[in-house]
Image (tube, rainbow, N blue to C red; front, side):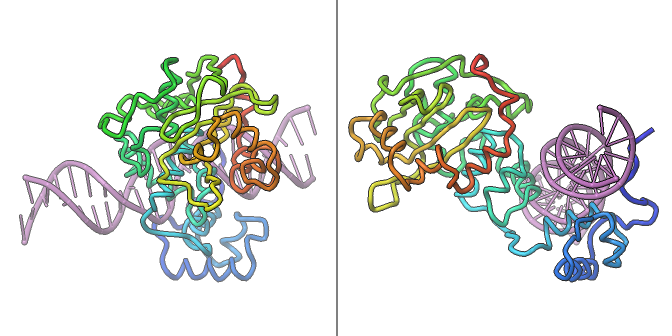
Length: 299
DNA sequence: AACGAAACCAACCGCGTCGGC
DNA sequence: CGCCGACGCGGTTGGTTTCGT
């Protein structure tokens, strides 16, 4: 008693798609779309294929604006950051990389990036204050400063990346390593090249939020001194990574920066955390069912 | 040049979820 | 409320290409 097949397996073709099949599907899709039904599509389009197969072929290969070829350093970094945070949620990760498909990213991860990641060779991850290194220091419940440095060739040998959100990339099982870590901003001063971790500010950022200062980016790019950010939301835990370079503008440390973050209108950071004007991060947040997986007791 | 191993990637499979009835 | 069909996702497979000996 197995599951009912989605199509008549005896009458569907399998294996590689031919150029003829591709053009049939493409033509049909451009004319009609799925009309809300992939299962019925092959017959309408004159294809002897399973609807699921058509869907996959369209989504992964034929639809417009698909990007093929080498992944950029930026893309690699995004994939690694998100993987460390949310695990193998490929469709969510793909959502942050326009033109890339989940299948593409999954293949790229499994064949190339996973190795690079565990060897600490992902671009801009070999620097001292990458958040993944920070997670390690939290995990060790020790000093906040990262134990890693650019001269440390064993950067990721203990797989600290898995612990930022509690996801073991080797066993694919969730872990909750942060053990009630709550370091307030007063514990630290934000400096370039230094790791800061903050939680509970102005009653607006809750416990369990990590704010990470300093990243692998070479510098702040904007002329007004604002910094680009990467935000990852996972398991109810917000991990915010700021480019290093910001502290020259916020010399009194994290408190001042966070205050500014919360009050400055139109600022992307502000918009991200408290408004719905965000680009991809809010989508990540929406897609994650973190309420079921998170409690303050667990971290 | 030949062969086996490793890497790559497109496609398949089955499960969970969702929405309509 | 339960059933069922369709969709979407992630793990896996297997064919092809590239690399090393």
